[in-house]
Length: 155
Image (cartoon, rainbow, N blue to C red; front, side, top):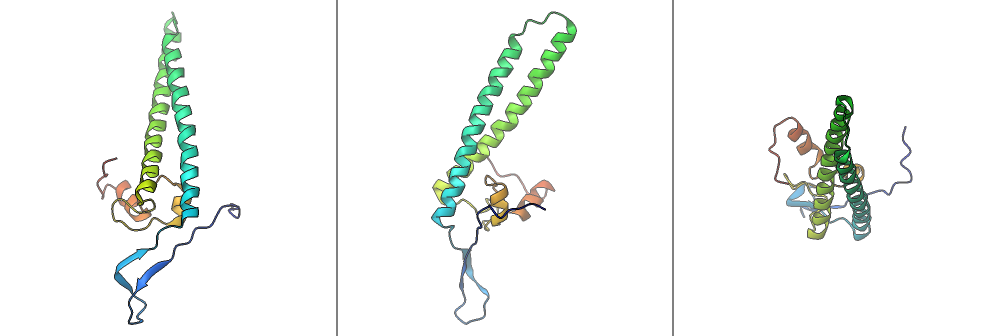
């Protein structure tokens, strides 16, 4: 069991509803925008992650260059050096992709579309945003994407 009592809670208000009292959402159903305090918390979290990733990418690139400079002579040393370079490249590539996703989430905050699925336009669940604030899809669209039923939108 995970204790999440220290995490801030997110809640969204929904409206507007039909005036006939049916309780059904209108055609313009849309959650109200996330309040500024919550949005600012996401922004701060994303900016911290962005700085950490930039430092990590730079350090990994430097490590890769130093692995390239090794003048190993025997075949075992060259193989180990080659493996290290490949591993560092793969790690750096994954970190660069994550950095791009974080930067795009920050751009969505600036544009006012943070928290909306880029495919269907629905609000992304608050718990999902807490877990993965750089996410671009609601859980339904993410599942479709992973099953190959949805085309990946341009990054």
